[in-house]
Length: 208
Image (cartoon, rainbow, N blue to C red; front, side, top):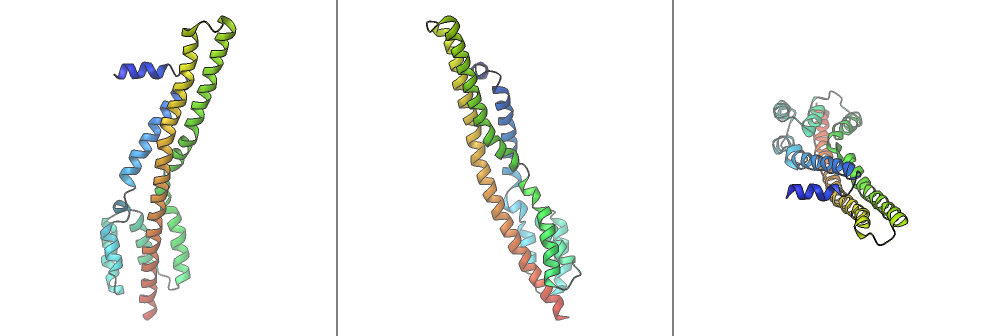
């Protein structure tokens, strides 16, 4: 079965090589995102719980211990807020915003690859269609329209590359949109948790 599939794809010509590479890259990014872009893996329930349960500055050491036990984007941001020595809301918020932009970059990792593949592979398929049709017209100009077997090679190349390009590009686009939306939702949740913690910390320190 695999041999037959390989022989079938070979008929698509040399443009099947970059399309195949794109399919492997796309699959790798999708698998990586499905594993690492889980909400509970990023917004660790233990970290979220201890942060939400803070009632006084005496609880900060416990929260820091929990953050150290569960490394990640949320933990790093929570530690930055918990350890901050400033007393003004704006000062801490600005630093949180700067640190947040750096931390959430890990969530976007690989999405640009998926977006590029979603855009490029259908174009590669279209290019394969053009190349295949050029071969068809070359055969017609030399041998006429009576050579059906000679014409079929170019037509097969045109159709196979188009189908392959769409087969890779459509799932890449679907998963790119899915992961982009999920990343956006996670970032909003992180911002909400961070802002709530920030307000608590400033309130604790303003009481002194």
